[in-house]
Length: 138
Image (tube, rainbow, N blue to C red; front, side):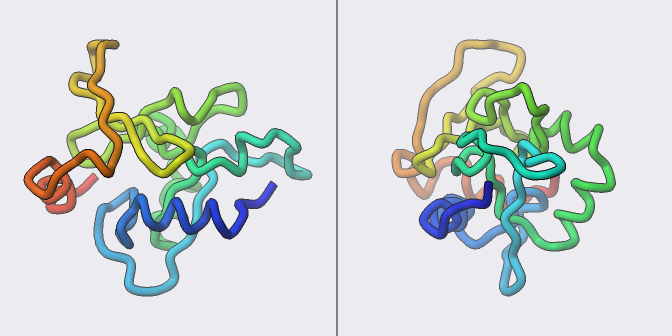
């Protein structure tokens, strides 16, 4: 299943026009990457077209994900077919986030601790981690 245009807009807005792999700005040619691959012949599973299953990425970062699948799985850029993308964190710089279908995310305070603080993107103020995140590479 392909992402709807509304879902694609939610993913781009969540990314704030930055690549969700390298965190650098996307000025043109951004792509929406399926974290949970559709598989040969596609899928009827609706989770495949959810915002939590998509990342906004540069074409070169998309190629990196496809060519480095083990590392991409470790970083949450890919998830297994049997996984729910809303339950597999994505690494953004030094932080880990669970992506939500509404375009928000849950910021994990400590990857080794299952207790986490829930913060949607709209709850993060300008002094929060976003500026620091965007200055770090993956």
